[in-house]
Each structure stands twice: as structure tokens, then as C-alpha cells.
Image (cartoon, rainbow, N blue to C red; front, side):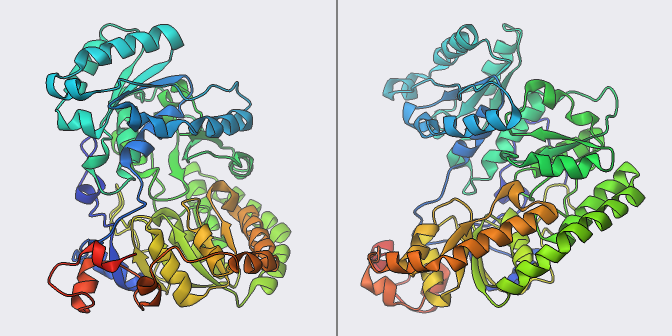
Length: 503
């Protein structure tokens, strides 16, 4: 079913894609089959601690936009978690050769009185302040749980304010309580950008929309696209309002995974016939990169040139990849990422001869925006057990305890500290550092560095004590999904009480 972009807010992933945040029960193919058959049900965890928030990621995406101001309509505490965003923007400014500008977020600071009588005037005052103080190119007004609960008509206020100011003002419905899946915040931000900034195309350009978090190694993508007479248009990475005004003129849209790019990319495909590459990505090892590259080349009418360039690059990089594989072959890894990376990183590790013993993902989308087939239908060669949880690190601890892998491969969501408890090295593999042949070699070098320097982690583990109860450590279960606990009669009664588990 096509997304309705005329609405003031995006649909949440649970309803739009059937997304789940809890699963324990089988291998990758079993998870995929359940999604294909339409009988995949979310399994509820009886204890949830450590998950992120859709509001956090929604505001983060909008605050990255160059010369934007975000009016965060809620208590000041909802905005306090963005203080660290200045470090991200400093790195982006340097990478793109632009003047650094810190995140510009203004909280309306709702208090108890505002929750009773409303706070429309605070929004208007904040917008006036933002416009006069920062002279922004765009202002976004974001919802929080508090403003959503009291029913503030932010969308109506935005329509009124757009008649009063010469810059675009948009509304982002990213209240954290709307969805259990924090990735719904990405979609909320993309919906706001699509309605506020994207314009109908005037002409076609030989550009490819590349949606990513930071694009910190963008020169790699640029090199490959330049070889077939294309230029990347980087989005969500310190890009400008003007960049978004031209996204409908590109020949295609792509990204690094199925999660972050899908909503905006589907909008461009649905509204302006810009093809969205939703099956293959450039970070899943050499073969997956080649499929991605040839798919773009076909759209651009440059297949012979792409094949020649791949042959040339393969001759350069393949000997080194084979050499690194020989040193890594036979190692085992536990993989912990979001769904957009877990399965592609597993492919990359397989190319390097590393066996994935288990994959843990923070949520799972049975379908992808704009896709005619299920999201996992092109991962049928993968074969390892998989669990789904909302970044619950006690599961990571139990998986490490169960499998004792040679290395933990994860993103920067916090599981690395638990690996150290077992003397297991960990590595953060993420983003465009994994792209293309270059990315395979980069990942292999990082893995070797950690595996060959394991002595430090082993010594460190001797000075670390478990962070959980002895009961939990001694149990043979690695998930706290309610259905699993009740079925196994692990705990008395029909309801599993988190206090009984004593994590």
C-alpha cells in the first residue's frame, strides 16, 4: 500500500510495515518466512531498559540540517539529550569543508500550567525568537509526548506561521510515545522534510540521492559514481535546504540500509518517479556492492562502463582481500546492529571467512516502504540464529555467555562493554567505512587489529564483575520475552513479573 504523504504526520512502522521489536525462535530464514506468510507477531519483553526514542532521532535528523532551527515543543528535559550533537556537527562541518554551526534547538519548556491551559503562544514566541536570533533557512516545530498528550494543534499553528514568515516552517510529529520503534522518528523527520522542503523537479540531473547519517567517508562513494558520470547528492549530513529542493531531479535514490532512507526515498519514487534502490546496498561485501553498482549503472545507461570499472577495481583490491581472509578464516562473531546493518554486515563477515554464530537486531521490518516483496527475501543465503530486541543489553550479555565468540561486531549502541566482561574483543563497524571493495579491506583490518590485540581485553576482564544477579547469570535463557518465559514455566503464575527475574 502506498504511503499517504498528504497527511500531517507519517504512519508508525508497526502499522505501516508490521515492524516488531521482540522475537526469539529461529534462524534468519524462519524469521523471513514468518514475515512472508504474514503471521509474524511481536513478542513482548517483560523487561525493557535501554531502548532509544523516536523523538530523539527525529529531532537529531532535523537539527543536522544546515542553518535550521528546531522548536522542540515540550519540557526542557526532552531537549537536553541533544547537547552532544555539537560534536557530530563539528565532524560534519570539517568533512564537508563548511563553517561549523552548532545545533540550534529551542525548547518551549512546557510546565504544569501549560499542560492544563495549552501553550500555543510559547510556540509563536519561540519561532519569533528563532527567526530574529538565528536568521535560519528553515524552522521545524517538533512534538513531544507532553504536547501530544494535551493535544496541541501544532499542524494548525504551522499553517498560520507560514503566512507570517518568508522562510518555510514545518511540523514533525515525532512524539516518542507514538511508536515502540525508534526508527519511526526517522520517518517523522523525513515526512516533515518532504512536505516542507522538497519541490517538484524542473529538470533531470546526473545526481544520485545518497541518504546516510554522516557520510564520513564520502570520497569513496564519489569515486565510484564519478566513474559512470554521476555525482552523489548527500542528504541528512549537514546538507542544505537547497540540496533538498533538488532531490526530485536525481536519477535515483539509495543509502546504506533499508531503515533510514526508505521513507523519503519512497516519497520521491511515488511522487516524482525517482527510482529507489531498495534491494541491494554497498556495504554487504564485494558481491552485494557489485549488484548495487550495476543496478545504478543500468538506470544511468552506463552498464559497460560500470563493468569495466569493477573489473579494474577488483584486480586492485582482490589480492589484498584474499590475503586478509586467509588470516581471519575460522573466527566466529556475534553481530549486534539495527536491521539495516545486521544482515549486510553478516554477508561481509562471510566474505572474510568469519562465521556469524548469532545475529541480534534492534527491530525488524517484515516489509520495506515501496517494496513489492518482503524485506528479507534477498537474504536467503544467510543461516544463523536471530533475535530481535530494543537494544536490550542484558540479552547481549547472555548471548556472549552462550556462544563465547572470538569477537563482537556491533554499532555504537553500548554492547561493547559487555564483551569486555568475557575477555572478548569488540569492533564498531558502521556506515560508509564499509562501502565497496575499500570497505571490505577497512573492515578486515579493524577486525584483525582487535583479534590480534586480544591480550588487553582478557586482562581487563579479570578486573570486571558481572552487572547482573547470580540467578540471571546462571540461567540458560538469553531472552526475557514474556511468551517464552510463560511457556517454559520458568516463573510461577500466568504473568511474568520483571521484579521476579532480578536482572
